[in-house]
Length: 280
Picture (cartoon, rainbow, N blue to C red):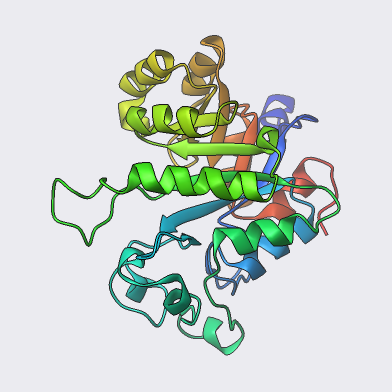
C-alpha cells in the first residue's frame, strides 16, 4: 500500500472535536455495536455519557398537556406500546408506555419515555453538565395539513422554561431547527442560546443562504451526504459545522475528513478511540 493510500484511510484527529451521542447511544443495532437502548431514552443517554461522550443529541416533542417529552419517532406505535402521536397523550400517559424495538431488544430493554424536566434534573447531578443538542420535532403528523407546526411557539417557550428552571448552562445547549421562523422564536425565548439550522444536503446552497440571513452560529448536516466541500463552505462563511450520524469505521473516517466541529455519532466508543480518547 502506498503512503498516500495509508494517509487517506487514517482517521483525522481533531483535539477540539466535540463528540455527542446521537439520540443518546444511537439506534437499535444488532452488531458493531449491539445496541438495545431506545433512541432518546435515559438509558441510551446515560450509556453515551459513561462511554466518555462530551454530550448527547436528543429529540423533543410536546404532550397533550404541554409537557416537553423525549421521543424520536413521529408516531408512538413506531417505537412504543402507544398509538397516535405524542401530542395526543398526556405526560402521565406517555411515561407509562414501554419502548418497543422488537426481538431481541425487548428481552433486555425495559425503558419508558421521560420528560425533558426529568432529564435536566438528572444531568444536574452529573459531575459536569454535558453538552445537549435539542432536536425539535416541529411537524405534528396528527394535526391537519396546514396546522402541523401551530404548536411550535409553545414548544419553544416550554423548552426555555425548563432550561431556566434547572439552570442549564446555555453555553452547553444547541437548539436545532430546520425552520428560519423557529430560529427567531428560539432567540426571543432564550437570549444567548446557540441555534443550529439543519440543512438537507440536496438543499445546501439554499440552506446556507437561510443560515446567513438568520445569523445562526451553526449548521447541522447529515453524515450520509455531507461533503468536505460543503463543510469548507460553511466554515468559510463563519459557521460551526455539526454532523449527525455515522457508525462504521469507514463512515466515521469519511465524516472526519469533512472536518466538522461536532459530531452526533451512533458509535461513541469507536469515534473516541479514533480520536485517541480511549472509549470506555
